[in-house]
Length: 215
Image (cartoon, rainbow, N blue to C red; front, top):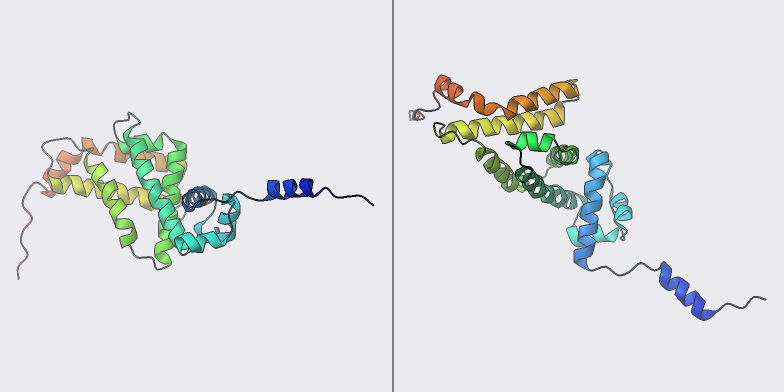
């Protein structure tokens, strides 16, 4: 009969036992795992068990630290917004669209965020959960228009058009059978908005006061 060494058994058990994580460490792991899963899977297919397995934590941690899978997704994609804007700002490119478009990983994260945001809105999440970060994105877009002849109205309208075009391509590009070349052409068009803003402002009278509505 083979004798079992108690000390060796204890060592093996200790080696197989996962180290206890702090809440902060567990949250970071789960956000990172969620981000990676959303890059390659439709949001509806990303389950709690997939996230916990990829993060190396117990599946109860999702509910314990975030309350729900949807809340974890919200915090994950909204955390990615700041990194996206800062990466575009630090790239040395003259406009955010070119900066993001030149970085495949960054573009993939932007697309994943928009797909996930669309899914979460369809699940009943309030648009207000995303509005603060969207204001930051809009503010960043506004800062790219440096022509002193442009009004705030013109700059905001062009910023919103750029944002909406990118969102539409990401969410509905496949529905419209858009090719990668077509998407690239539209992004190039957005990147060159500055060439037409002043002419469009004059044509649409965005440099004039907004007429007051009659009561």
